[in-house]
Length: 491
Image (cartoon, rainbow, N blue to C red; front, side, top):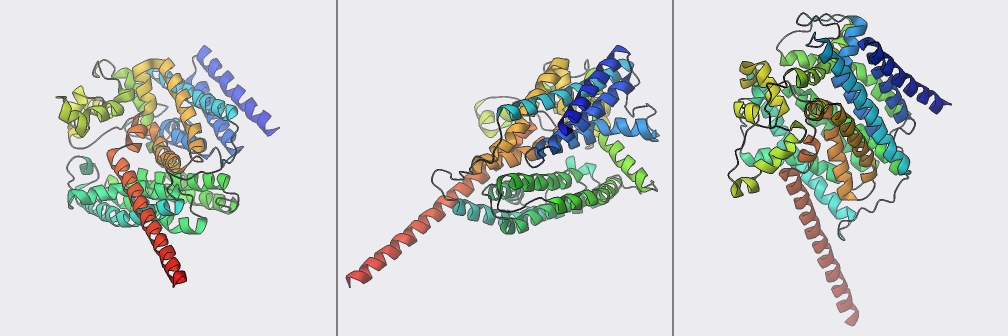
């Protein structure tokens, strides 16, 4: 019965979309978008622990790309810089029309891609193989946990250094003029910390052993608030919840995420929103002007939803953007061009992020749009960011948005499947999922490039080599015990 009701909501959203298109009414299309979001979230709750990644992605999609439209429409949120009835930077009806259509196509094909893979692959709790070329889980767990604790110290030092800098110079200066107070190796050791943690979590430690590492990881997210970075804080919380839910599905011996945890999370949401809003004002060096709790909620979601404008800029700035750039694969292209090996073999230009060269000739949609909109602010560290939806629309139009989101839906479904194969696959799943959740406000291929970055690969190699050495030491100790036992028996 409940599933039938969900299908009715899906049918309703599709019908409302076509009605909105026929009668040229964006309000009706917005209703269709919200209905489709409700459907997607409802679909996720039917098997929550297994579909938690899809659930979380729809939440971030709403926050970054839909919330602003809803808040402005329902509450008529007062924005002194923007009088558009949807809170957009545009008054051109065609641009607004395209934004709404792109959002609906994205959500629809996300669901189609995700549900198609789920229906063709009946998900059951797989037997976790765990082993890596004969290495025991215990060796990998010990090595990765030790490396996490070791690099955690350096991560804290770097975050405190960044917090000191932003408190003196301001948040935007972090991206234009910040220079670490520590040697190069300290920053690189700090970058290893998340990869080491995910490798440890990928060994499926029990609930008791997981507690302290997870709490320390949340602490790192909390420290990032002192820097002014809200995204790290939220993403750290989300990936911890996702991990608990996935373990809930795969580990039947322990309850990892039950009703108590659900109520705690729901109860914490208002306080987290207030905290995140306060950090936003801290970054701008201003005081909160909202009075009521409802005003704070509206203020938060309205400001977070600014990324929806990037879909409009993909159309309005099309003639000013570099002709040859394919932004959808921009991060991947830059990675292939700018890595040490390619640069040493070929004489290729290298464009550093947040520079004029990158904005004019590079493959960064964020840099190009930010520079065109405000060259002076861009040079001083300001940026509008990017969105995978905007990049798909700019490069390939409606068809590209549909195909891209269909593929993304499949990838999201694959993450929970990967999590149950072995340690390396579970590590890829956790690392990639955390990055995918930010895709509505990030580049289309960032989740691939960042997952397989050189520092992440180095971290994995160190853990595997450490595990091999540990295994060798265990074998040597075992052989010594056997030898001593034989010697004693002969005597």
